Image 1 (cartoon, rainbow, N blue to C red):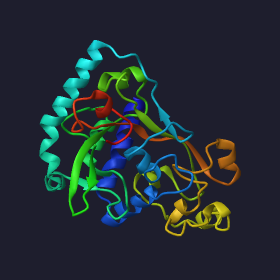
Image 2: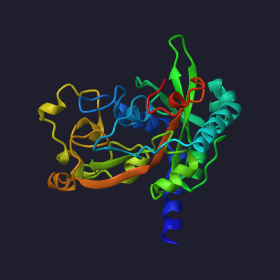
Image 3: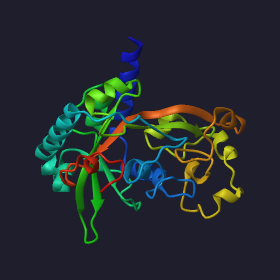
Length: 277
């Protein structure tokens, strides 16, 4: 019963996000701004989710498993199904018409996430549908428009490896989760989920270190992201250190996620790679 309430609360968070304005979506983009502490050639949290994902204090990945003929067969079927069902989204305007909205559209990225709030909510309720991913992944074209390269699927954070393996084989892919996140005083997990990075709270401003050398050159970052100690690529990844600066520690924010690139060819290693083709 408690798990059902938790899933409903997560779904509600995504429904709230569906009502957010485009300004909030733009704020969410600030989470993706590059910093010197990122392990990704992309930018920040979503950059890690987009182009090059690496294991680290803020990124937990499922372990690899030996490939089996059954997994290979499943992988080929997954790629075929995605090609059949998602090809229509090669016209990004079709995606827009069906409720897939771009996050961080004005922020340079390797891969842009066009997210469906309803599909994401369904995934967090434990519903998995290859034809309706939570996010479509696009590369921005030099002369305008977007090129479809893949999709991102999510699963509840309570799912164990066996449950994730049933969705996408662990021998082919690495599901990942954003872990050990320190948020400054005045910023809640709900703020993060809904893209609020500049909440009005008296403790918020005082918790930020505006003089730290590690913030040099971060003028483009705003809200709590302006302080390199906090967030998805922050220097703080331990609970004690987080609490020592008045922050709140979150063992995990969001659920499990996986990227699949079905249009990159027939090589399953490329289709299920942690790096965008």
